[in-house]
Image (tube, rainbow, N blue to C red; front, side):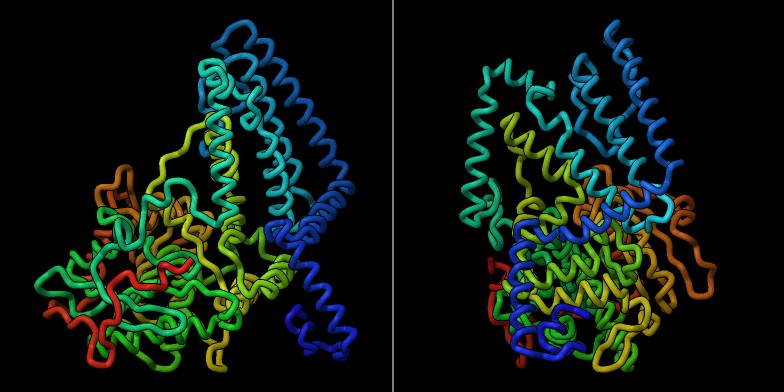
Length: 589
């Protein structure tokens, strides 16, 4: 039973003033607890840790194995210490993971810093062995305990201590400690900005409507949740079918319209597409009761109605990014069920419709975790962007927390700000009801993939979507792992599903403009009736292409369009332009 049910007396317990007061006290206490733990449930973490310890305590074979491996690690470290003392060219006894760049500095190869690094890496390996492959422990519990161990080790890494880090000690000696002076100034500046609710240093160089989100257009529709932007054509003719983009509401839409040189919107417009973009309102506590179905009705469904009026008689290419793609899939499934055939195609950017293997974010998804977040959101009316950002940072704490702190505060150097980093710092909020429904119905219960998600009193299923699908996954995505995105092949009943796997992560892999260095992708179309290809085989057998996948996508869109026509008017008699792009909602803080 959820806290919402208990708090409203809809559970099996009789509703009395005493039970109401008890639940109110619990809710207030847990809300404060959630804020102090950045939304991480202590009860869930304690339960996972106890279960791990209990299973480890009843596994004497595993204990002997760990003891033997600890001894071997110490012997390896002792041999390395003896050999490295005799000469500086001794090879390390353990290498960091390819993604771990904490020990890239040459100083980590010299004594005594090599011993610090090697000892830490061996310790890290031992803890990974100690928290995995435990008989009787579920995979999810293993992942939670292993994640907690990684967080502890990341905090204790020798790179984080100035007297153990060769790069810091070298800078300190060469600059007579001025790196610490600069670092302290950086810390004070960051603290002042955090207290004042200001963006990080350098973000002010990127202003929405001035040097980012500058593609010309008009806001042609506004309701309590969205502004719909229609972008001005730049070609004499356009493809007949317009494009509707549904971005995620946990981010500002202009990740797809950053600087002119890496704007996907500008790229589409320059290739002759009429583009409409949803810009979501940044909700406050007044919107606390807006749910997922409100987002569907006031978002993509309202936008489709407006586009049909501005571009009458044409089907629409629909595009969804992240959770925006999930919402678009829900809307498209309901449309397919109800014989609404207004869509010409559907494109997913890093979108999941099956949340059974939703990656490392599942570490934060459990009944205990969702209950804690619901209590915090109930008090605030929303989930704050900083609270959501903290969870994402923990997934990559090496890069996003500790390495940045070493660079900013110990070495005293700021990483230069760019447009993507400035956008990432422009945080949004999520209403209480919507985020609770999203976590419970999709993450916890996986209802969309199992036929349990209800729209207008009836279930919706992905097989009811029969339009061509173009789905993009990114290799390094921690938010929507590409193998999870790939599951669209198992659920869709479309004549064709084109899947793209591109280099980069959840954001940088999508913002992959032509000319971007070191970009590559794989693309393959699966037709109805052909045998299923598992993701690993797909990755091994599909050829790798150099460059940006954007050009492949626009070619695909053109192949599913009906020809060129004169550009439509900006707005219509019923929906006249109300404001220049980028509008008002994107500016809300």
